[in-house]
Image (tube, rainbow, N blue to C red):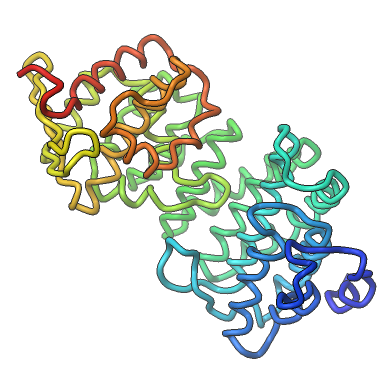
Length: 390
């Protein structure tokens, strides 16, 4: 259905967004029309309203399903090539088309979450969004041929999201063939990482990605359960953990997959590796010292000796170094917290816990006894001054 017909045929007086009772907020048809405005500023403002009004706080309203259908229909409109600012934590610009794909991914994620028992809107509205998954998939698949890498990576995130739906999983095999035969040959790192993540998540062959020259792509491929006992895959994970630049790069938000360093690469490396491997790889690349006042003691994280290995931590001020050890401490605390059913006991740990969005770990299963021993040792290695013995 042409997008003009959607605007004309939908009874917009019968649907509401988050601020339906506010006279100061534009109605949904006005927001949608502004997406194709000739002025880039108005398009950017309309994009913000999609997130903040039509899909406010990841909630699905009665106006969200028709907005989804409208966005699907305008994706191939040349006016969606206008550059717009990226999200709050991502500097620079991207085509409006990529931003709209990311918005579709957000809505589809919200619809999928409600299937797992989380409230994301009224059941009839959530079901209407689920019914649009097929259209969303076809529209996103059509964007794979776009010459802009930002659009391709956004479309991959949308495809990964909607193909989690049971009724669409039969499309995974042809998409996986495209990922192996085409996406893995592209020069864009982000696209190749997303391709490896999708192959790993779906359980398809990721051998090609595991042999990629880029260590982050190899690590993403190593996440596949098929490589759980493969030493080459474990080594690929450890290489990323030992590289500050790569660890920092993995802190970006990938569509559908989120931040893969703290929520995928790091937990998998802990589960699959022996502690001495983890320490050996970190010692090889890291200046192990951290100078930062801690909330509980006002001191510094000290060095603790474990066997013959001295462990210190990198300076927090080093922007490429902070993600590694901050997430180390958050992962360790999370797993200990999950087992005990209580919040972290180390007062200085609370800041890094909240800094890395630890609540996202809450649904992770209890870790193995092997991982628990690793984590207990790691916690002892990171005691602040005054709480540990030299």
